[in-house]
Image (cartoon, rainbow, N blue to C red; front, side):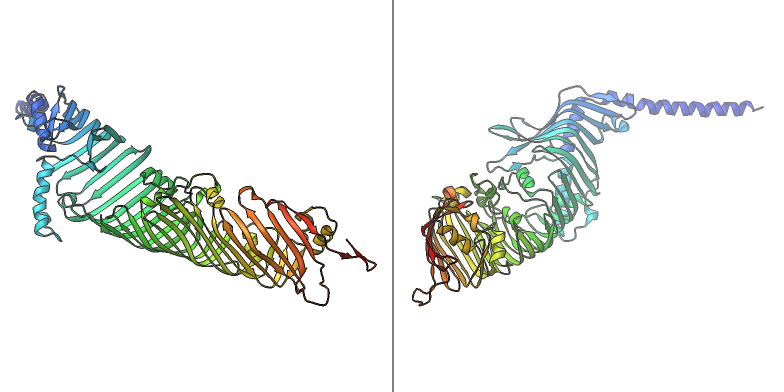
Length: 620
């Protein structure tokens, strides 16, 4: 049996353990009697740098964590005489040190804000001013770190940085508002996240989600030396933004004081460029059909100028490479650079800079206000391209937006078996927006050009040149074409005209009554050449010369073709190619009138041709 001495020793050990356990358990109870509201407010002020007010009585929790729950908490600027809160929260939970509380001290490092509201000041220029703390622990640490960074900006002595514990701030269901003389403007809602900085000389991170302009967005920031960043030095930083309209990330080094400088890798991806620009409210054309876009590039520069080198740009699945410069020091942002693609949809690309999309809605007003919000000068090239149904290759083009001018020009391209140059310009002037359309197609295949232009009848097959220049008010596409001024010209060499059976035409003309062009469109007429010259004035094309030459005859037209109503008012004739020839022409002379509409022209004979009968006599 155990000796009495052994039993007494066991009971002594148990008693001591019980006393220690009771003492430890009593610490929070004793500490809680020392915690008072004013002391907590004082320590929170020293921690945050703001004047802290607590309306409710702190609720002290002992188990499982020693925690104080505060209600109706406001943080205000010490120098704000009106005491307008910069941060207010329905409830704040802070985790306390029970042993520090025994002596009446409040020692905490973590704070949890429930439904906080952060108020930013709206400046006269539309910018936002962040709340400025006065003398908090972080502010004092930044001031000490700034002196260390200033002594050696390139490689600051990290051992001299403050190493105090700081902690973390967690926020749930918060919001951010902008305050001006007109009232409050809500910027962010459903703001939830956490800022963590265990010690001032350690790595820090920020994660947050919020709703901005109706879209859910998630932000992540991290740096191994955040205090160096706050003090104006350069330190590594990783940042990412994820939302439905766009995802973006940066991985590199940055300096956030003065002229903010970055040097690293940036990535951006969006399923719709239009949606991104509308979300950011940058003033993009509302009808622009620009689709997906992604960018991956190295980036260097500051807030005045950013350079994207070796940039991989993908537009609607078409990858390209190039260099881009973004300038932010002018009245409006400016983008310049060069991009090279393997293939590209030119209409989609041009729609980002010129109001191309409205062509599908002729009466819709063309929005050119984008020209006042950005300067743009892009040079691009692509091995293959499409412009609607037109296929092009070896394209060199420019896109320019500056001072109210928007232009997209194809300076060189191969199409229709020849060379093509084209351009569209919108120039905002005091008297209204003026538009200009230009096309020069040289040494092209007329049949391929006609097919692409949607012309199924009276199309010359052969090599030739087409020139179109139209100018007019750029209110809408219909207004432009209804009031256009300019010229149309075309010249083709030996070939044929598709959609004209000349023998059937003459036969129907000899029968005198009018007839549809469709009735005589089943043939092809060989020609030595075709020439067209027209002057466009106020939306009406006046045919100065329209002539087709066969081996022995000349076919010509003159008259007007108005855009409004799509009507035709033309007269023409078929006559001998050489009026002095002693031999009769292979085709007798004939004169006629062309009326109807573009889609359904009809022919009315004026002078019926005299055709030979099978017996050798003539008939009229």
